[in-house]
Image (cartoon, rainbow, N blue to C red; front, side):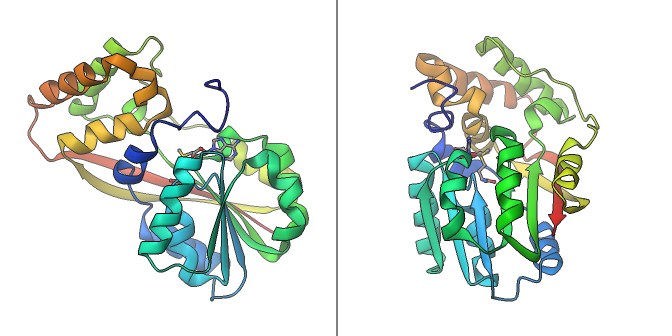
Length: 262
Ligand SMILES: C[S@@+](CC[C@H](N)C(=O)[O-])C[C@H]1O[C@@H](n2cnc3c(N)ncnc32)[C@H](O)[C@@H]1O
């Protein structure tokens, strides 16, 4: 197993991911429901589904959901989330974007494929080639991302947390603050014949120290596996630094949705 193996990248984070990664904003999900006519019919694919957040939230609005993720622990969490939510129209498979061509016949036709914080891990051209073939007219693809705050948040408490992370990690991501990227994903979708649109949804979040520590451990580059024996010292150091700030720690977040429609 290597860090580049899609099955292992998040292998030690599933627990923290399930509990501490924020939910997607309801407004973003409502947008998808309206845009793609999710009226209780059609099949939805949640590719790179992780703990099943998107698939389970959208399950009441489609006929069937198939969630696919290379990480078996994530899939276990997704099944449990579906059980608790009584989402019996869901199916959860261990697999990755590389399996999509083999699954195509079984998935055809798809109303909507959602990829939440996962498209960047995939062979994007091949994935969209396959999806373009098996998506029904009016259906499409939605790429959701939730800006990772450690690198791009602007609050003082986030600066302080970043300093601790940078002490412990050999190669932390650069702390850039908010930066506007060109939108290569919209272009990639357009190149595959999809009509594209992009929406951003502002969300205010509040964190406590447990949430901050859990969130950090859910990040692939700061996972329990990456921290190894330093994990306990790391958690203590984050909590110590946060004592200099008044809880709750506030975050102005943005959930971005790029859609492509057939
Ligand atoms: C940041 S998590 C997002 C999980 C979920 N979609 C969400 O929005 O909460 C990224 C997920 O992508 C999965 N992943 C990584 N490489 C992948 C690949 N090549 N194909 C499909 N999923 C992949 C990981 O296992 C992980 O569960």
